[in-house]
Image (cartoon, rainbow, N blue to C red; front, side):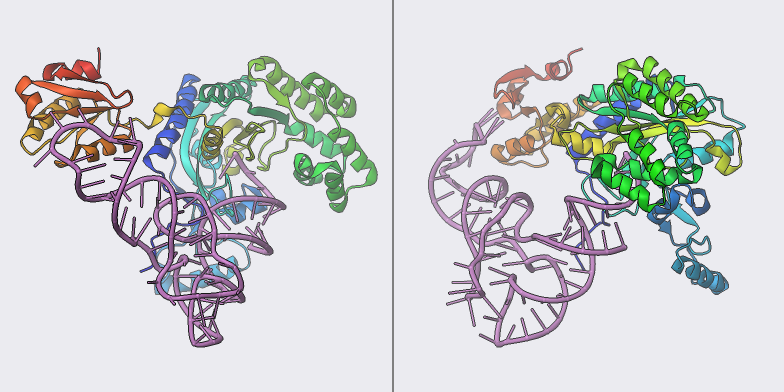
Length: 455
RNA sequence: GUGGCUAUAGCUCAGUAGGUUAGAGUACCAGAUUGUGAUUCUGGGUGUCGUGGGUUCGAGUCCCAUUAGCCACCCCA
């Protein structure tokens, strides 16, 4: 028997971690609800066709595929062998792996909308908080199982949605106390216009992938990469101009207008961008024309949230507009726009910056000491009463030295110790000790409830 | 998926050129203390040295493989 272990990149969460995670989740959920989004949950697995080809070539490789059951049944053998052959060639095969763990929440959402568009009230605004899985190599801030919190609007092209989503980002991070985050915005239409100018639409992906690395590898290396991808010198020069745009949002927009202003897509993109910047001015958006984002279904505004630059961590949220997402599932003309929070990374950032309040770890309010088998019967009766009043409390499980019981309370961060021994029973008063201040007072048994829960 | 670094007690780590019985701090357990803890005193090492092989008279230490974590690439939340 080997040591028990869990799969690479997946984690157990202790009580303290769960409480902190729940704190983040409840803030997000509350804000989503406040903006009129309603919850949705979808299964852990999707049929593999639902997922394949939606996230680009790299994405396909990172999808966790689930081996079919019953492969050992002789009647499936031939299919299974053929499927295995396909897999060995780097393709996927429903005969071998018909299902896969979901990779994000957007595609399952699109599938859901496509399946239920007849019943849904549009615009359909849903939020979804569930784990997703990626067969990526784990490292800091990157896990194979992590939780995404998405809010999307399907069936509305109004830019008011984009504005609201930006405001949601701002409100959530403000409530979490995560100051110094940066909410960047761009528009895929502007990138498309740039691609048009430089080699045509088929270069869109090459160009976006390369310029997205500007922060990391610098201008020269980006241009070099584009050269290798087959762009001409004059085209590279346009990109050089594009990438050297800087200044305030207004200045940058002005510069793009000068550079690409004769392109209808660029005009449209800038219009959309300006609308969002203007109406979501409270959210402190930063226009960043180098922002590209990997998922290739985005068609309009795109968002990305960077953590405060005092920590090294990838983006903690992202999103954008995808005009024809349900089109992938045979339902036309439903436009979607959405955002996602990466709560595992938000957690790591908040932990690193020590932004969690101390009171977070409170569970049990009061520990009743066990002062002996007889005495504890009284304590147990009182514990039961308090529990009926929704006051979380517990009785130490066996008679033990007080030292031990104090330490138990301390470790579990229980704020009060309630001591009921023979003296207390004689006087019908409990000795209640505040473990943070060390002060104690005698509280009559019938006054315990108001003591812990003043109404 | 590619490359690099790391792995010793619950935790943080030391362990020199391969040498007997693997150490420190902290945590923990027992007692001083049969009703008041986080201070003090006394005693206690609680370890498959990540795992599996190999070299050697002898391996925590050297070699190979493997697993996990971290870092870079790729990509991303």
